Amino acid sequence: MDAIELLTTRQSDSNLSFPGPSAAQLEVIKKAALKVPDHGGLTPWRFIIVADDARDKLGEIYYQAAVAEEQDERTISRAKALPQRAPMIIIAVSPYQEHPKVPRIEQIESAACSVFAMQQAAFAQRLSGVWRTGYFAQSPTVKSLLGLNEQDEIVGYLYLGTPTVDCTKPVRHTPDTFFTEL
Image (cartoon, rainbow, N blue to C red):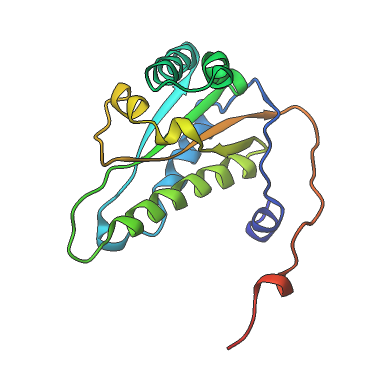
């Protein structure tokens, strides 16, 4: 797949199954994550790989957070199963670093670019994935149980695996809708 095809056909896919990324595919995904814009060379990203039995551990973390933070019954009842939606999850974290020229938002944006780069690398290798956020990305309990600091930002959970169906999505947007000239 060439770069233009990748950039213009990439899509999210939540219907994922085994196998997840192989060791060689994961190495490419990791390298892609580190080639993103990085103002000041701060490397404002860290990643936690969740695969195999660690998916159960993440489900338990989600469950503990949902109970501790008194979430609704649906959130609590689904918590343990959520990490089972894909063979691998990469948790992207932006550990904030005080810097006079690189504000917090730029550090988070750099980490967000890394998630996109990893998803692109997976897609280029005929894998698929979906980038999820939501309640568990914002939960102080999840952050604590993952060993993160309060100011760290969970930028997202990148679920990765093999697509189970061809879910080519129709073109939803045209450039003319979003681009103007000054």
